[in-house]
Image (cartoon, rainbow, N blue to C red; front, top):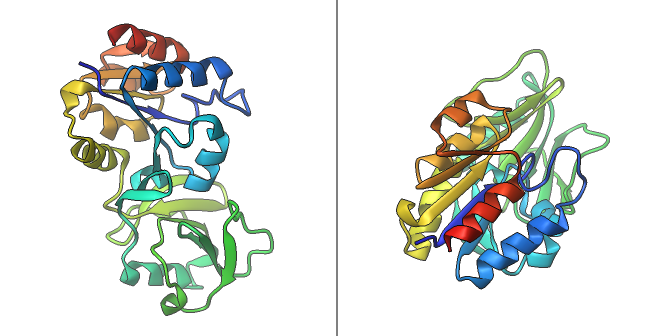
Length: 243
């Protein structure tokens, strides 16, 4: 029996060509919820971004944010894997980073000289030492000086483009967050469906009996999923038929 559906956001619930989630997709999410199925969105985005983009159902669904570092429902933290206080010190190394922005639930801590920081509706606070940070940090946006950084014991590279990199705790990923959400809800992988479109969605798939890859962006994902769908809407329609 289907009890939980978890879906990636960018490229899945939100097609890359769209600025808003299709209303038909929202309707299918509401249909699943009305049938007693819990719904979660899983993304590298922050909670403030996701809750605004899914405002119509924001009080009904779980948010797995910051690539698995934080799970929230109705402002209540269900699970968290923040950076350790010790690991934050590396982002203050001016020999490695031009600047960094460290995101807690409510604040954006600014390190170095970034004239146009991305705040995600969080209150900005300029800091020069790690001990000035008073909240858990779940994601870091930083600009390396001369090279591309790889995973270490202090952080995991979540996303990287020319000029900047996003980091989360090395112990955070979507699969770990999903496993804890299942424990919280009292469901198993045999009650769960997962939908995604990229390699960072792979950790979710081993925790779901029904796994859907969207499109052909990730050949690796396509190989391990039980279904391949053209869109999240198509996958959600199939899941509605399972209930």
